[in-house]
Image: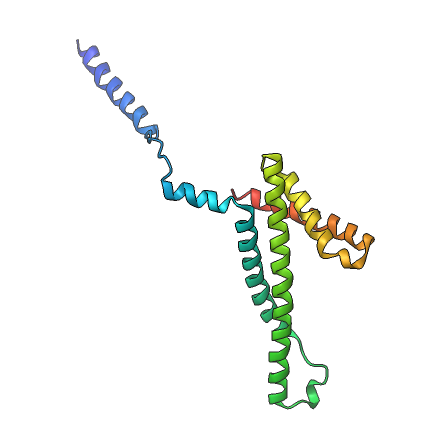
Length: 171
């Protein structure tokens, strides 16, 4: 009888430790009406593209300010401190506005292309990113002629895929 009494508590403790190791089962939570509406709004290609353009413009603005601050005037030795400050401020303003426009257009085109391609193909994969990168690179470099557009397409597509693969590791 002592053997049974010894095995009984062991079985109970081992089964309770197995239950403790299992994660608790949580019920499935359905999205609220507000969450569904928010997803519907965000899934609209126009909304997604405009917001990407605005965010890209903001990024370009800050990059332009930073890079404009690094520019040095050619005749720095002959300029007074006030002239250098004025030159620096103008340079930062020009750089900021130029980068703001470029990044806004880049963000808008890339996001619009990726969204339209994703909806047309009904899947989210690297092919969408590559094609959207090609469209963006080709569009941005089209003024340089067909060779420049092809090079821009290939370069931006490759860059987009590399960034997608890099960010994929952190999902």
